[in-house]
Length: 385
Image 1 (tube, rainbow, N blue to C red):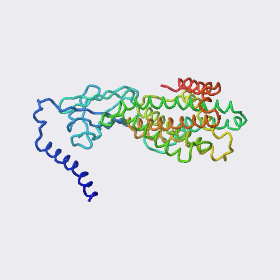
Image 2: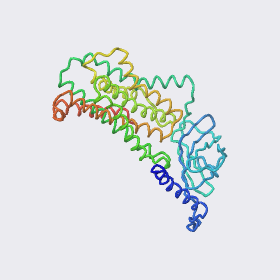
Image 3: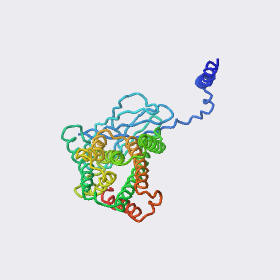
Image 4: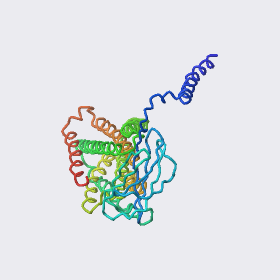
């Protein structure tokens, strides 16, 4: 009898909700507030694809009512277009706007979309360059670039492993604190980029809220998984560090790939070398927790791939299927994962030192933390564009 009563009390509020929605739809009490004003309309440009004599735009609607695209202007002139699908765009719907337009290489172009209510939405193509197409040559070039800015510097940092094995407790504390410092920098950098990209996403995704929720979810899930066997140490901790760095590099790869596709940036030799120098300490940070063990050679290769490999995947996705909300989500997850690693490395440092919280105020720890942050900040000047 008790279970039946509980079921009734569970279904009763749901039934009231259904009745309320049915009354709202049929009675339409909101019609009394209709003063003739047009519905709220919003349109976000998510992708731009430039090919020979063509401009294709992926747009997402975010208005209160279905919206109809009536006209398209390019550089101030009305232009014929094809919308796929052709139906009015409901809230959250996407459509491709396809134009046959002779864009000029290296020039800026402005596209303006006009709806049937007269609302206008402007999208600027800052530098017109052909969008990369999916072929073997493009994938190979992007793989080489991603490996050079992601895998190579991590591998170089891991190569310091034999030279660091003989350091004492003070040196170990310095390296672990340096790892915390570089991770804190990466976390702040990833969070800032995530919020910036969230501002470019369609309002329907609630970008900034999404970033916070995704970061918190990643942190809590990884904390729960990482603590199943107690406080991680040794190879387990090194793997967590590599995972956090890899998720950050995935977001960075998405941003670099998107910049290439939009023509907003080009990487010269100096900039690629800057990325390499900037990321070398990541490999040293991964090596720090395993200095007291002797992993097999394949373990170092796996750690380098885990930390740097996602940069390749990010470049591929970013150049071919970029959208700001997904890049923001990837960076947010990376920031949450890095925060979890910061907590674990700090806990491991206090446990290994034997003095607990007191160890955090020691000279090796403070200098290592400062060095990690300062090195990452200084080398970031080489790669920020």
